[in-house]
Image (tube, rainbow, N blue to C red; front, side):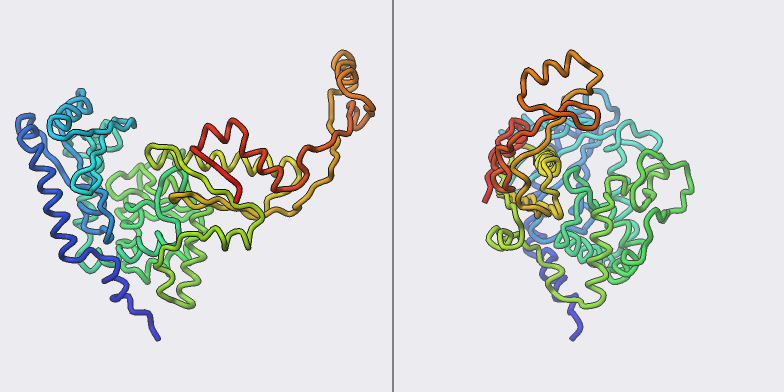
Length: 400
């Protein structure tokens, strides 16, 4: 029996009631700052998937781009406007500072940009955002926007959605470009499953000089910025993962490919040697997620260095976050050889021999056999997660 994509589309698309509610909230939000913007000859544009009409049900995160006629102190100017209208305004530092506000159970990110007529006038990467919005709107009808929704949900469920540093996957804009390029959800999957690494896709035929520092598994020329690789954040891991899952779907499609499943710690403990429960620090997802990633990479590095050898490792950024791994050796020898300085460096060799008893020579160095404090993987992991480097990256971490 063929999979009914219309049924899935109905599940993931905003209902008329949800759309009406969001329209009301955004209109109310913009009305609160409209008079101030009018005085400054500035204007506001709805961004992200809401502005493009490609948003998924339940996603009430809204970007608003406030366009100013010049870029002098526009973050400060916007902050003053927002603070006059809202009680709590969070300033977020970036290439140009922007703001986050909770309003009517929705999260608004308000970004100050320069109002420009051509891409070449941009003074900051965010100045091009309105061009991205308009390109997607102008190159997709309602049917194609539904196809984009299917692609986004598929990629969310596959955990390859998001260009943040801790994900290194496909951004919403990249998925919109690719769906428009291939023409539909099914064609997107066929195209991705067959695409070769280092392929260049230039949908607007810019054929310009690409920034060679921004390469990735596929080169997706931004349709409105000919020198920009829109997929620059994409990792080879997430690229290959989507190719693999797309192939599986094409061979045997099912509703499960669209379900976002949270990892169950009980099931994880049955399959993996180490399962960690991590609580993130407060802050922007991209920042705290990157800190968790660095902590987990540090743990893996130490496990490998000790000789346990990580075979498989992964993690899932949720609340709480779970990280898991399997090793080749659950135990390592109770003793290990600690190499000291080269024999030629007599002063250092003397100091080494003074510190340790029963030294010997190995590979033209002085050496000694030492006992490990922790030779079992779980005991070793318990010790490593107490390291200051790990503790400063997360709010809390424990071995399950």
